[in-house]
Length: 95
Length: 483
Image 1 (cartoon, one colour):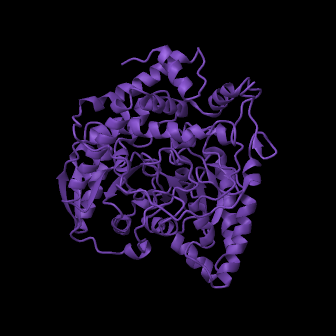
Image 2 (spheres, one colour; image 1 turned 135 degrees about the horizontal axis):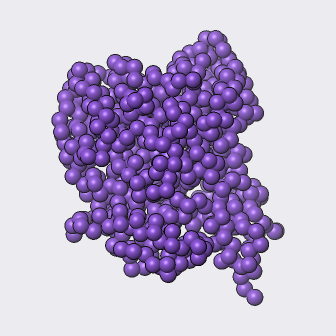
Image 3 (cartoon, each protein chain N blue to C red; image 1 turned 120 degrees about the horizontal axis):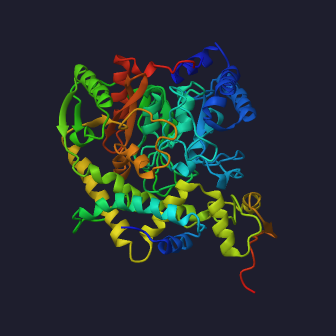
C-alpha cells in the first residue's frame, strides 16, 4: 500500500507533529516502506488467537489507597518552560 | 586498573591497593583522553563522581562496603538522574535536568557505585547504530569508521574502550545485545519486569527492559545483583525472588541441552558470523552440553510485528513531550496547537517522528484491528514457539546480529534495512524472555556475538552458561587496539 500526502497530513495532525509540505513526500515514502514490511502479518491466520498484552500474562497489581507521594510542585515546575502562581502557562485557548 | 574485573577492583579497593578516588580519576582521565574521538558520553559528572568516590572510600574503610562500592560505572542517558541532565539522546530533553532518580540509579547509589556520567544513545532508544542521537554518532572502538550498534551504543563503546568498567543499558528490541555483539562485550537483557522501569524513559512499555553491558558474565552478575528486584513504583515489576547471580556462575553445565533454531541460520546471516557461532557451540559440546536443532517457525514475523507494537506504544508514550511541563518548547507559538506541533517537530529527530507517525496510524480509527490487534496475536504465536522450544531444551543459542559492525552511514538512509539489524534479537523482547550476548571468535578483527536465550527468570542460568564459556576460552578478553 502507498500512503498519500493527505493521509500523512492527517496522521501528523493526530500526532500533533508538524510535517512541512516539503517533507511530505519523503515521509510518505518512508512510512510506506515500513507498512510494506509490516504487511507480512496479513498472510498469518490468527483466527481465535488471544492477543498478548503482557509478556508474562500478569494481572495488574493493586495497592492500598493511601498517600505515598509528597507535594513536589515547585521542584517539578522549576524545569518547566513557563509557569505562573503554580500553573503551567500556554497560549490562550479560550477567547 | 582499567583491565580489572569488578571483583578484582573490589578486592583491590578493600586491600587498599588504590582508593576509589584514584580509580575514579583514572577513568575520568581515560574519558578525557579517548572520548573526543568516540563520543560515547553525553555528560561526564566529574565533580559528583569524585564526591561519590570519597564517600565510597569512607564506606570501605568503615567495613560497610557492597561488591559495587567504589566501582565507577556509567548510565545510559535514558535513566533519570536527580540533578543531572537526562537527555535520552534527544534535543527534546537537552535542557531536562531530572528531578528524581530512576530506581536503577538509586540502587547503584545505595550500593556505593560511582557515577562517571551518562552515555550516548540513539534518540529515545530508537535505532540500531547510535546514529539517531542528537549528540552525534558514537564510533566503534574496534574501527572508528563503523557503528557501535544501538541503541545502547555509548555504553557499549565506553566499556569496550575501557572508559568505565561497566555500564547500564536498555533493550526494547536488541538495544543491549546487539551493541554488545558489535563491540565485543557481554550484554544481558533480563526477563521483562526483572529490572524496574521506574525513571527509565519509556519507549515501548511492554518491551522495555534495563540491563548491563560488561566485559564478562561475572561482571554482569554483579551488575544484575544491584539492578534486579521488585519495585512497587513499576506496575509491571516482577515479584519473583532474586537469585544470587555471582554464586550461580560456577555451576556445572554438563548435560546442558542447547537448541539451535534453524531459522536463525538462514540466508540473511553472514557465513563467517555463522561459522564463529558454530565454533562457540562446538566448545559447549566439549564442555559437556548436547546440541539439537529446533524450530521457531514464526521467527520471520518478529520484525514486522515489532514495527507495529513498538511504534504504537511509542506514539502513546511520547505524547507527554508537548512543550508544556518540561523539555523543548518552540519560540513564539501562535496558539496551543502550534505550540504542540512545532515543539515536537523541533524536538524530535527523523527516526522518532517516523515511529510516532507509524504508531499513530496503526492505532487510528479503522486500523486498530488490522495492525495492533493482529500484531498482539502474532506476538502470542511467537511466544508459543519459545514455550514449545523450552519443553525440549534448556537454552537457545544463535547469532546476536546478522553481521559484524557495519559502516557509519551505511544504513542510515534506509530505515527498513536498519530494522533488520535486530532480526535475531526482537523476538526475545516480544516474548519477554531473558537473553545474553557474549563475544565469540572475531571475523576480520571485528567482534561477533553469540546470543543465548533462556526461559523466564533464568538469568542465573544464562550467566552460568556464559561464564563457563568465558572460563574455557579467552574471546571476551580481546581489547580494541589503542585502548
